[in-house]
Amino acid sequence: MRSSIAARPRPSKLPEPQPEGARAPAVFCRGVVKRFYRYEHRTTSLREVFIRTVRGRPLHVRHAQFALGPLDLRVEPGEAVALIGRNGSGKSTVLRLMAGIYQPSEGLIETRGRVSAVIELGAGFSPELTGAENLALYGAIMGLTPHQVADRYDDIVAFADIGAFINEPVKYYSSGMQARLAFSIAVNARPDILLLDEVLAVGDQSFQTRCLERLQTFRADGVTMIVVSHSLAVVQWLCGRTVWLDEGKVRVDGPTDAVLAAYQEAVS
Image (cartoon, rainbow, N blue to C red; front, side, top):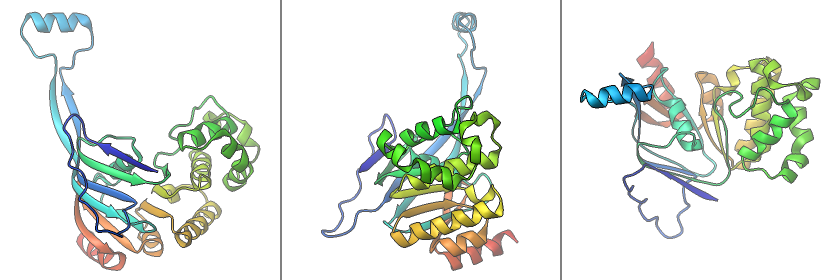
């Protein structure tokens, strides 16, 4: 399954033709830019619109703030790639763009295969619904059919290890419990591409160990993984390639040991 996310309304350039017999990338980003906007004097009522229109004043003043780009990135099938950098460098924005949560302001993103993302703890969960009900909802968001959700229900619940809370509303869950359930659903969706944002920073040691064991299995099975983590030990253990982002742009992209050494020297 191949999906593309392109900026609108401008048409994006298509990827360059691949040599015959070459493997298509799991994730492909070309010229990706993401802007966020800060508004001043934004109108909030029809009365304000009328007054400003009559007086010839702008309805709002918009200031663009660049969060990312331009970014060119290619991730091959089966690669485990880490994104590192200071807070605000654009790591989580990259994952949200790949997951389709954000649309790029410019450029093109392509993914091939089922994408599972654990980016915001419990994102997509409804606080009033039980864990079991959210499991079905979250699974549907990740592309699972009702039959697939039912078939994997016991495995998901066992991995999450939240006991009887699976039948309680999620609004009573701690952040760690939400992380367990979200991660369990994502990994049991059996993805081709797994996007992880600091999920290993939450939860007890037992949960973190189980997460790492499952990720090791995924790596052995050839699942493509893109991981954001401030834990350089996890990055070094899990990922053969690391991309260092600085102010929304790629500063260094290469073998993990070399990139981590350069990063640690720069921030020390």
